[in-house]
Amino acid sequence: MRSPDELRELVDVELTRLPLADELGELEEALRYSLLGGGKRIRPVLCLATGEALGQDAGAVLPAACALELVHTFSLVHDDLPALDDDDERRGRPSAHVSFGEGVALLAGDALLAEALRLALGYESIEIARDLVEAALGMIGGQYRDITGDDADLENLHRLKTGRLFVAAVRLGLDVAEVASDARAPWIAFGDDVGLLFQVVDDVIDDDGYAERLGHDGASRLADEVAGRARARLDAIDVDTSVLGELVDAIAVRTG
Amino acid sequence: MRSPDELRELVDVELTRLPLADELGELEEALRYSLLGGGKRIRPVLCLATGEALGQDAGAVLPAACALELVHTFSLVHDDLPALDDDDERRGRPSAHVSFGEGVALLAGDALLAEALRLALGYESIEIARDLVEAALGMIGGQYRDITGDDADLENLHRLKTGRLFVAAVRLGLDVAEVASDARAPWIAFGDDVGLLFQVVDDVIDDDGYAERLGHDGASRLADEVAGRARARLDAIDVDTSVLGELVDAIAVRTG
Image (cartoon, rainbow over all chains, first blue to last red):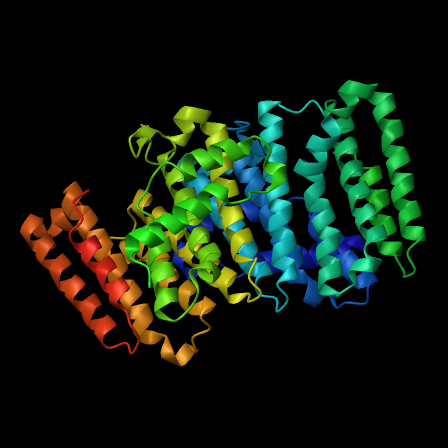
């Protein structure tokens, strides 16, 4: 089985050569700019590691993994727009709308979401696209709660905005491996924990969200607790989940 | 078989009661505002009439037809944003971003695209979602050419921006009716003509595009020619296409 770093390398290579719809014309440049601007690739790596733990070839899981990264990138491109977070920088470079203009960035985000679905629809099984679109809808609902503040429940907000795509990363791995629905619960619970872990660590780094509510130390303790719970979920699963364990460790100690 | 008006009524009723993802929360209001703000429903009616001509129950075609209208509405909501056309009015009412703010309108557009795909993914056959997402990508590519003006070829621009969704309307009807691929060519050519007809008539009404290039009379003659070609395509198809013929007539004489 490949290490998280090796899996990330696979994702980066695949994203670089990903064919995009001809009809996009030069809009493709804005998609590639956003897609290839670095990024930790945590969601696709989680998806690939889940698939490999279940005995799948990485190649079979790669389109689903990349589709997740496209949905994630779509959300970043739209989030950065002046209408939402108005962020001029993303990963140390100008945001898509700064480089290409707001109109092009808007369309590039739209195209990334559509391309993600197209990629997921390349599978014979319809389940992969179904699970991806459900996750995208949950994520959009989370973004809505984030900007309107109409939900005081921080956990629910993050479970939608961040968590849904993490759970989908695991779920798409299960889909490709055709894991029966009655054997999925521990995997899904694991994906849920990884999503929460990622968010809490993110808040500790940025000193907001959970860190604001629980204090830096309180949020760090929560992260440790969730990481421990995620590892326990893996221990209870009867396949070699060591790479997924490494991934949990890497997310837990992340500092930026 | 139902008349175009009866089919439109079916679409309006279905759109009104369309269940949307729970996770969207109150964002649902912005989706419904845009979706239920009137509109001619030409694409879904074209889809339903195609399905009925092929012996399908309207009920079986309705989800695909509504999915088309959701994609169309997504494109309107995003097009109206200040980053693109900056239109404050749509169908005699304030645009979505005027009513709900730019951030909410952006997310509502995203959610409409995702909901369209979710609806298409409700079918057992994966083809419907595949064809819908290809059409959405073509449409986005057309919008990109429209705002960047990087394509002097007006026909290609419209074939993407407007035409793709019209062809998809016919194609989704064929998908639901499981028409074999070698029997599809005349139908697709018909869809292509209807899309062009719609666009040329639109330009005659707005006095731009084809009317600007060919003059009012020249564009009107082109519309007549394309309408004649579309009717000839129907005549060559060996099922009762009378309702589709009525639809061509209605589009050809449209004045607003």
